[in-house]
Image (cartoon, rainbow, N blue to C red):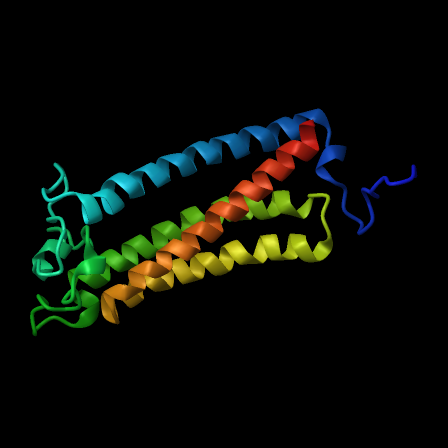
Length: 203
């Protein structure tokens, strides 16, 4: 081995730069496709949730919930007719069970049904993204400890992200803010692994 050269098989794993060209192309196109989807998801969050919550005084077409520009808005503004937690729930003081009929058990309420649907959809979607990102991280030219954290942290973030939905519905709307550091964790790891992988394969 030449002086200063990093061993590509120091822990028994080949590195991305050792992959054959078709494998590099596959990894690259999947990363780019997922990056496009992540940008779309970020845009959806900004337009559907962040902008109406903080900057809009009128409802957006297609979304039955009212905006929550002030905390004085009623809980009716926080739910769509299909039970979705609407825009501005972080500013509402009365989002938990205020309009639930006494005859309904908690698992029969629209809030519970919506949260359950949201949970399983996002568990499948987010986990599939980070299963692939974890597989890519496994072959990065980094120490075993760093690669282990790059694999573990996104899945821990998924659990926290899902938990924050249930907590903000049944405990306090303040748990909305948990989405921000968790989302930052997702984004940072996705960007780091993606750019590092592309650099190792093609630079």
